Image (cartoon, rainbow, N blue to C red; front, top):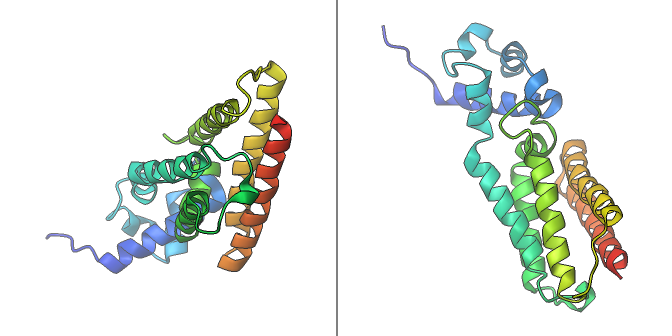
Length: 204
Protein backbone atom coordinates (compact mmCIF):
# COMPACT_ATOMS: atom_id res chain seq x y z
CA UNK A 1 0.00 0.00 0.00
CA UNK A 2 1.32 3.43 -0.91
CA UNK A 3 2.31 5.73 1.92
CA UNK A 4 0.48 9.04 2.11
CA UNK A 5 2.60 11.83 3.51
CA UNK A 6 0.96 14.89 4.98
CA UNK A 7 2.32 18.37 4.30
CA UNK A 8 1.40 19.63 7.76
CA UNK A 9 3.28 16.78 9.42
CA UNK A 10 6.33 17.43 7.26
CA UNK A 11 6.23 21.13 8.12
CA UNK A 12 5.93 20.25 11.80
CA UNK A 13 8.98 17.98 11.56
CA UNK A 14 10.98 20.73 9.81
CA UNK A 15 10.05 23.27 12.48
CA UNK A 16 10.99 20.84 15.25
CA UNK A 17 14.28 20.05 13.49
CA UNK A 18 15.22 23.73 13.33
CA UNK A 19 14.56 24.11 17.05
CA UNK A 20 16.60 21.04 18.00
CA UNK A 21 19.48 21.72 15.59
CA UNK A 22 19.68 25.33 16.83
CA UNK A 23 19.80 24.14 20.43
CA UNK A 24 21.94 20.99 20.18
CA UNK A 25 23.83 21.49 16.92
CA UNK A 26 24.05 19.13 13.96
CA UNK A 27 26.23 16.61 15.78
CA UNK A 28 24.34 16.68 19.08
CA UNK A 29 20.82 16.42 17.69
CA UNK A 30 19.13 13.04 17.26
CA UNK A 31 16.15 11.96 15.22
CA UNK A 32 14.50 10.75 18.43
CA UNK A 33 14.75 14.25 19.95
CA UNK A 34 13.36 15.83 16.81
CA UNK A 35 10.50 13.34 16.75
CA UNK A 36 9.67 14.16 20.37
CA UNK A 37 9.73 17.89 19.59
CA UNK A 38 7.42 17.25 16.62
CA UNK A 39 5.20 15.03 18.81
CA UNK A 40 5.38 12.06 16.51
CA UNK A 41 7.01 8.65 16.81
CA UNK A 42 10.63 8.21 15.81
CA UNK A 43 9.52 5.59 13.30
CA UNK A 44 7.11 8.03 11.69
CA UNK A 45 9.81 10.65 11.11
CA UNK A 46 11.63 8.18 8.83
CA UNK A 47 8.59 8.10 6.54
CA UNK A 48 9.45 11.70 5.67
CA UNK A 49 13.25 11.82 5.95
CA UNK A 50 15.64 8.96 5.28
CA UNK A 51 18.12 10.03 7.98
CA UNK A 52 19.41 13.01 9.96
CA UNK A 53 21.50 14.26 7.04
CA UNK A 54 18.49 14.38 4.75
CA UNK A 55 16.50 16.31 7.34
CA UNK A 56 19.34 18.71 8.14
CA UNK A 57 20.02 19.64 4.52
CA UNK A 58 16.30 19.98 3.88
CA UNK A 59 15.98 22.72 6.50
CA UNK A 60 19.38 24.38 5.88
CA UNK A 61 20.04 23.96 2.18
CA UNK A 62 22.79 25.31 -0.08
CA UNK A 63 20.50 27.98 -1.50
CA UNK A 64 19.99 29.40 1.96
CA UNK A 65 23.73 29.50 2.65
CA UNK A 66 24.36 31.25 -0.67
CA UNK A 67 21.61 33.79 0.02
CA UNK A 68 23.10 34.67 3.41
CA UNK A 69 26.58 35.10 1.93
CA UNK A 70 25.24 37.30 -0.88
CA UNK A 71 23.36 39.59 1.52
CA UNK A 72 26.32 39.87 3.89
CA UNK A 73 28.70 40.75 1.05
CA UNK A 74 26.18 43.27 -0.28
CA UNK A 75 26.06 44.95 3.14
CA UNK A 76 29.85 45.23 3.29
CA UNK A 77 30.30 46.30 -0.34
CA UNK A 78 27.70 49.06 0.15
CA UNK A 79 30.38 50.85 2.20
CA UNK A 80 32.77 51.07 -0.77
CA UNK A 81 34.16 54.59 -0.93
CA UNK A 82 32.68 55.55 2.44
CA UNK A 83 35.18 56.55 5.13
CA UNK A 84 32.70 58.02 7.59
CA UNK A 85 29.37 56.25 8.10
CA UNK A 86 27.95 59.22 10.00
CA UNK A 87 27.73 61.10 6.70
CA UNK A 88 25.34 58.55 5.17
CA UNK A 89 21.71 59.50 4.67
CA UNK A 90 19.03 57.09 6.00
CA UNK A 91 18.26 55.98 2.43
CA UNK A 92 21.92 55.30 1.59
CA UNK A 93 22.75 51.96 -0.02
CA UNK A 94 24.51 50.72 3.12
CA UNK A 95 21.47 51.23 5.36
CA UNK A 96 19.22 49.54 2.82
CA UNK A 97 21.59 46.57 2.50
CA UNK A 98 21.95 46.32 6.29
CA UNK A 99 18.17 46.26 6.68
CA UNK A 100 17.85 43.60 3.97
CA UNK A 101 20.34 41.37 5.78
CA UNK A 102 18.73 41.93 9.16
CA UNK A 103 15.27 41.18 7.78
CA UNK A 104 16.61 37.95 6.27
CA UNK A 105 18.09 36.97 9.65
CA UNK A 106 14.85 37.78 11.45
CA UNK A 107 12.80 35.70 9.02
CA UNK A 108 15.28 32.79 9.23
CA UNK A 109 16.43 33.18 12.82
CA UNK A 110 17.10 29.54 13.67
CA UNK A 111 18.61 28.73 10.26
CA UNK A 112 21.17 31.52 10.70
CA UNK A 113 21.97 30.29 14.24
CA UNK A 114 22.60 26.80 12.86
CA UNK A 115 24.60 27.94 9.84
CA UNK A 116 26.92 30.25 11.80
CA UNK A 117 27.12 28.50 15.14
CA UNK A 118 25.75 24.95 15.23
CA UNK A 119 26.97 23.33 12.00
CA UNK A 120 29.96 21.37 13.34
CA UNK A 121 30.24 17.98 11.63
CA UNK A 122 28.13 19.02 8.64
CA UNK A 123 29.04 20.30 5.20
CA UNK A 124 28.76 23.80 6.69
CA UNK A 125 31.32 23.13 9.42
CA UNK A 126 33.71 25.75 8.01
CA UNK A 127 31.04 28.18 6.87
CA UNK A 128 31.50 30.60 9.78
CA UNK A 129 35.30 30.52 9.55
CA UNK A 130 35.25 30.99 5.78
CA UNK A 131 32.89 33.92 6.28
CA UNK A 132 35.28 35.45 8.82
CA UNK A 133 38.17 35.21 6.36
CA UNK A 134 36.07 36.72 3.58
CA UNK A 135 35.05 39.63 5.84
CA UNK A 136 38.67 40.24 6.82
CA UNK A 137 39.72 40.44 3.17
CA UNK A 138 36.87 42.80 2.33
CA UNK A 139 37.79 45.02 5.30
CA UNK A 140 41.41 45.17 4.18
CA UNK A 141 40.38 45.99 0.61
CA UNK A 142 38.05 48.71 1.91
CA UNK A 143 40.57 50.45 4.12
CA UNK A 144 43.39 50.20 1.55
CA UNK A 145 41.32 52.57 -0.61
CA UNK A 146 41.90 55.24 2.04
CA UNK A 147 45.30 54.06 3.26
CA UNK A 148 47.18 52.74 0.18
CA UNK A 149 50.35 52.05 2.16
CA UNK A 150 48.59 49.98 4.81
CA UNK A 151 50.96 47.30 6.13
CA UNK A 152 49.15 44.13 7.20
CA UNK A 153 51.10 42.47 10.00
CA UNK A 154 50.58 39.07 11.59
CA UNK A 155 49.32 40.80 14.74
CA UNK A 156 46.83 42.83 12.68
CA UNK A 157 45.44 39.67 11.08
CA UNK A 158 45.18 38.08 14.53
CA UNK A 159 43.15 41.04 15.80
CA UNK A 160 40.93 41.07 12.72
CA UNK A 161 40.22 37.37 13.23
CA UNK A 162 39.10 38.12 16.79
CA UNK A 163 37.02 41.11 15.67
CA UNK A 164 35.09 39.23 13.00
CA UNK A 165 34.64 36.05 15.03
CA UNK A 166 33.16 38.25 17.73
CA UNK A 167 30.92 39.95 15.16
CA UNK A 168 29.48 36.67 13.86
CA UNK A 169 29.33 35.20 17.36
CA UNK A 170 27.31 38.15 18.57
CA UNK A 171 24.87 37.74 15.68
CA UNK A 172 24.39 34.09 16.65
CA UNK A 173 23.98 34.93 20.33
CA UNK A 174 21.42 37.67 19.66
CA UNK A 175 19.37 35.47 17.34
CA UNK A 176 19.55 32.54 19.76
CA UNK A 177 18.84 34.57 22.90
CA UNK A 178 15.86 36.62 21.72
CA UNK A 179 12.69 35.79 19.82
CA UNK A 180 11.14 39.25 19.71
CA UNK A 181 12.11 41.34 16.68
CA UNK A 182 12.60 44.53 18.70
CA UNK A 183 15.10 42.88 21.05
CA UNK A 184 17.04 41.30 18.19
CA UNK A 185 17.17 44.60 16.33
CA UNK A 186 18.37 46.46 19.39
CA UNK A 187 21.09 43.90 20.11
CA UNK A 188 22.38 43.60 16.53
CA UNK A 189 22.09 47.31 15.67
CA UNK A 190 23.89 48.30 18.87
CA UNK A 191 26.73 45.85 18.31
CA UNK A 192 27.04 46.78 14.61
CA UNK A 193 27.57 50.45 15.52
CA UNK A 194 30.24 49.43 18.04
CA UNK A 195 31.83 47.09 15.49
CA UNK A 196 32.04 49.67 12.68
CA UNK A 197 33.33 52.42 14.97
CA UNK A 198 35.93 50.01 16.33
CA UNK A 199 37.08 49.03 12.84
CA UNK A 200 37.52 52.67 11.84
CA UNK A 201 39.57 53.27 14.99
CA UNK A 202 41.57 50.08 14.43
CA UNK A 203 42.66 51.20 10.95
CA UNK A 204 43.23 54.84 11.94
